Image 1 (cartoon, rainbow, N blue to C red):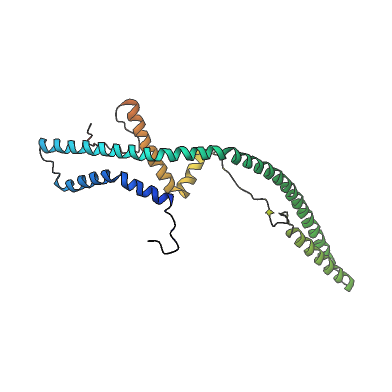
Image 2: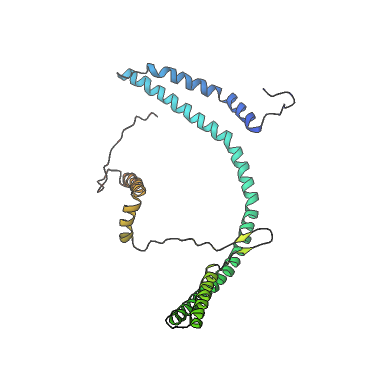
Length: 246
């Protein structure tokens, strides 16, 4: 119950739930009747089997009517949702196209900057290595001047290496937006025979699940196509029988 001063009207969801409860009352009552009758269902003769078949027929009819009503109640909302999707789709596609365009240009720029930074890093490393080699030669010579020069070259080499490591190609806007290159990877199957042992070792559970799905599909497809059972290497075919009432 709402408190004083907070008598908010019921939400659309609550109103819909109340309406559904009202129109499905006959279904709930009928389901309860079948559920109560279930303990009394004993099938041990043609007569009791016939009664059970009649009961199953009524249950099938109830299930069909329930599903038809569910769809009838849901379809108007689905139609409205499709109208909303259709209305927003051009705008969403337009925004996505603009995003992709800008992102492509930014990626091209940052990729070029990253390439420059990598070239600069390699040059700095080469220069640092050269200075270190000069410093090592000077250290082998005597004299204070040589020792001081060796220390200077070492310091310069370390500074160049540090500058190369600190290179940042990220872009930052005045509003705080930051853009940086992100590397993602995708794989394309080149050899199933070579890839399969890797999958068996690292993804055995997923592979087993997929093989189970394919085994079921192979049995079902062959049965539909040929009308007969088949022997599939590595697959145990099991027939299941279910009573069907028409």
